[in-house]
Image (tube, rainbow, N blue to C red):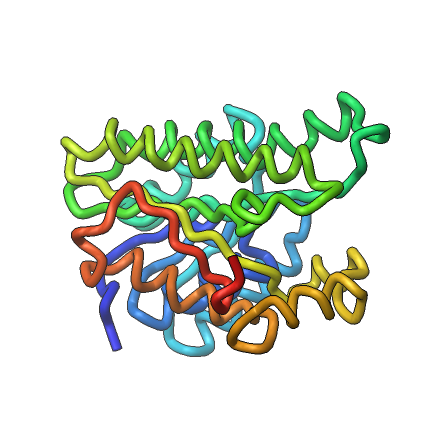
Length: 248
């Protein structure tokens, strides 16, 4: 299969979880992929190795999207290595849940710097290289719709992602660049295991509220990302796609 043959994709935060699954799925459809990581070089290199073993092309590039110079260097490296850029997946994200009385400046800034500022800085750097038919996919979250208790800051960052998606779809639309948000529900990843969500009451509740009867897996999200990256979604822009098994 080669829906993305000849395309170059940059996936931020792709050393594990949803980002890794997206990177591998884009490569499986023919895209050359830049696998970004902030701290887990080994994880990113493992993703690259898996892509190459399957016959694809990929490189691992470190850098924090929350720092302008590093976001710019990430994009510059992608273009220098592969010669172009067609797909940007803004997947880098962090989350911490805390009730109102425990919110601090550090808690706020940590999440907004990566989830919102990082998205903007990376998109700013990438936009000058994107041409007609390019696709920007912002990974949001179902939390912006269901607003769970204890998630005020994290939910605010994902609400901002939704809003930015709409704004940039209008700004970049005249250049025939599409911008959409892909908003997963609860997904089983290394991160949700580490956070203690898997096997918790929250997990049980999420499953019970999901019409399709389970929480998501990374590949559930990756297949939708492939759709948004490909010409199959050429008439979609400014949209929020809830990948949640029907939970809303």
